[in-house]
Length: 202
Image (cartoon, rainbow, N blue to C red):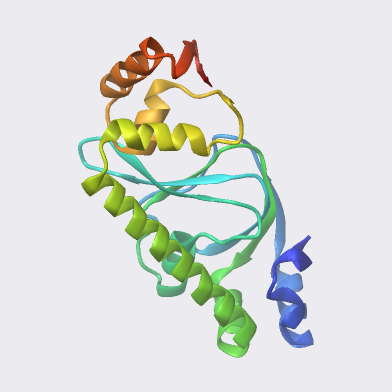
């Protein structure tokens, strides 16, 4: 599966061998914390199956989702912490069961130094996340919460979304009470139908 990362086939034989010798195949259950805000990451995840939520925790206890990590992407927070031995600026939690490979940071730094294909992959990844972060800041600053909530619901892969109001609030950086009130208004206006732990977009 590691071959599906678009940089891997362009690596030299030496770098491929170094990677494969040090890659530890992992399966991670749903709801597991991969690293916490403030941790210094020692290993780098290469995700092949599943989804990871990366979020920022405020001292008030409120959370806001920074991004979701999908298969054959890498986590910028994980990379930055591991490459620079600095504290992670967010927390990563498995949204469902994950499969992938964990590789020690020093191995990946050696491959990064030697391989232009991996350098390009990492730069493109940071450009993608930077655009995503700019969009998040713009939404929080300029877009009303009800519009952000509607956008989130419409971006999901199904019209029936299994999620709690509290988790929705965490994604959007709001409170459960505010999200519940907005969802009730949506239901009153025929936009959604609510049931316990589930939202159906009409």
